[in-house]
Amino acid sequence: MTRALLLETPQDVPDGAGGSDRLWLPLGTLWAEVALRSGRVTGGAAGPSSVTAYRITVRGAPEGDPARPVAGQRFRAGPRVWRIEAVAERDPEGRFLTCFAEEEVAP
Image (tube, rainbow, N blue to C red; front, side):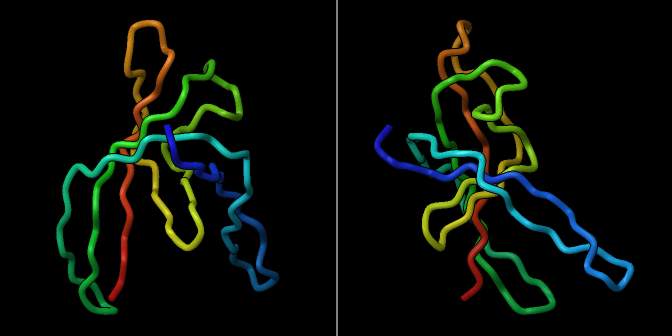
């Protein structure tokens, strides 16, 4: 676990015009191991983008602990952002968690 990643959680706040804006609140820094799983190119309204799937391993934390990642949160390292899609315990004792995440990069 050689990479420091900032764990962030979303919070929707009113935008003053009847809608909302999404803010990302920092929860803390976790040391992680980041491993590539797969990659693909997708097409969208703004053009093609690269979507890469990763397996991110962090130390375990009890359910409900703010240091335990959950789906819908994200990791950040500088300009890079990984959206957490799912989280599973890697071992029976729960010492480590595997976060399945995706990073999208537009050219």
